Image (cartoon, rainbow, N blue to C red; front, side):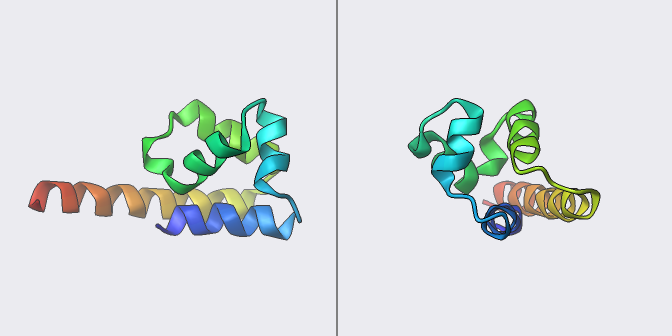
Length: 82
């Protein structure tokens, strides 16, 4: 998924581990890993908390949201075809 790759890229650019973000969110690394790899099944408020923890700028936010939209549209297309 594109949004997942963008999120991982932003985290990597910040030199943060999954554990670093999990601590900021008050959750386990395993829980964060699950969220980072399956964004389409996350609640919007959790996605916003993750983006805040990563201190995303406007450009990163726009790229992420566009990718998330594309992932969502692709998911729905696949879901309706299957």
